[in-house]
Length: 128
Image (spheres, one colour):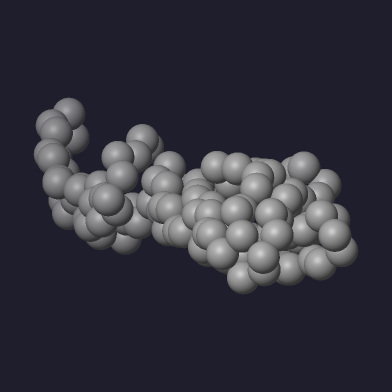
């Protein structure tokens, strides 16, 4: 995904038991340096036989980075469910139309021009 864009995915939590399930979600070994993934909720309750939808948003901020974040869903009562989010970020795809510019023979005290295009093949604007 290109830096500057976001994408969301849904995770469905189900409670197959006959009792209320209280849960909390935490990152595993979080050093708080990479905030590419975020959740819309870190805790909640699921009614017996019910379900809860969690939204995970990936917003990369460093071009060319691979991000892998692990989470624990701690269900009050002892169960732990683990899940992993992974994402690869891309920078803008920008290049020049030519690797060199040849001006040929130019007379002293005269000027000549050549065209050099900066091409942005990304879906995001860029500066140069």
